[in-house]
Length: 455
Image (cartoon, one colour):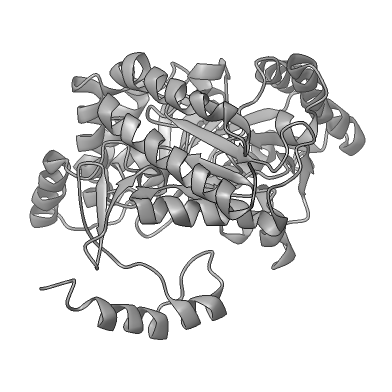
């Protein structure tokens, strides 16, 4: 099919019939968007033939890029052998079993069990079900309140959106009334006049204050991303996570680490929890577990919780039709094999990530850059009109939207969150490709500064 010749028809059909996630429906129906037609290595091509370096790894998921034939082969073979069967009613399948063991092998010793889902949203729903079941079996059903953070993202189902702390999502639905939120460890936004380490401790201790307010006997768990990804790549001060861990340990609060974005090498280790020394009781994963080639998510469940679940009779009344789907599990197995045998995570941490962070930090002196922050293979560039006052470049994040659109036209796919440009390129980038990313972003910043009259 000649995609370029068919581009106009596809765009019209898309506008007429397709409701997109996180989209202004009225605006899209009037103006439309891009249709992507193919991808290779770290590049994506739209239906007009425009090539873009994918600085977002799809949606934080294609850590190995778009040309991993062994994953395609694994899915193809599995589809020919057993395209589907469910894991309900004492049934299982070989890829799901093998992937469960493979995930246990790359996580810390306390994780020996996995519950599969289709996405991170469903995995965080599952976390709530597991936490409730854990305390019910212990005879403490009143311990059910969950504490999360402002500006967190934990998914888009009712439960996952309730766990998240993003205002627009809460404004449009009635969320769960047993989820409470504390401040995020966003130094640039919340406490730029404080010493970063002192700020980290102060914000962490809001968890302790919230537990005291709600009652320790009522609070079940605290959920957080090691690094808040969709919220703007919020890098916590080094003092933050040790204090959070202390509070959870001392107050008998389960700790849930949402690794949907951080997992599988993004922070320089297999999981962000390792990078920050976190010891979670439950760990959410999805996205990069299959390199984005198939939908798959899940929860790593610690022995602390499993020991209670296994010690009591009674069905765990929760499940999903496609939990442990054989083709998705096959994609996961192939992905983990590449990550392990290719030493991809360690190589990226030692070579590409330092170059990526170094090149982006060169942009800190740019006239409209207020902060560059990052860890491993993701980063954010915060836009301002005035560095000293941190005045925003334009109302309603228009400056960052303009910069994103400019970068897209130059051939760089990046995202805009608030007033920040955020990026998470594949772990398999070369130094030359990182240079191209940084150069295109710098050009987009120049054009944005010119557009808004900042000299």
